[in-house]
Amino acid sequence: MLIEPTIENAEKVRRAVAAWGSFEETYDPRDFISGDILSFGGLMRIDVHSRVPGVTWDEVWNGRLESELLGVPTAFAGVDELIKMKRATGNAEKDLPDVRRLEELRDKKSL
View: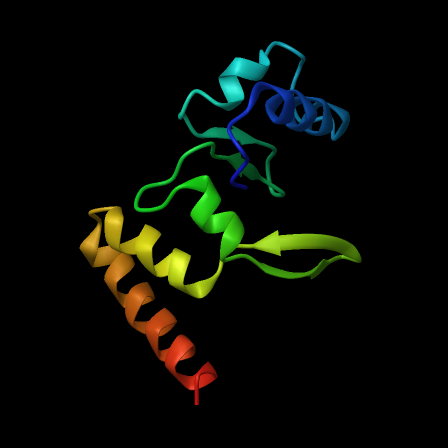
């Protein structure tokens, strides 16, 4: 999950994750926008990011795809933004195959 890096938004996310029962309320809202990846849960894990490589939050938000997940309106990073993120990780062995698949998907959609 990529969150907008503001204190107000971080507080909302902290309360939502706490209500999910995934952690004790030991986290401060600033922890959610520190740039560190916070992981919560076990089998149903959530990774909370306030920054990702290759794109800004505004770029991801402006390029988002909207859909539903389990009946809940949800925004997902767009294909172009995912490609930028994957290219910027520096993990070519793991991410370049994903980049190729995402580019193929994007090219098929544009036909």
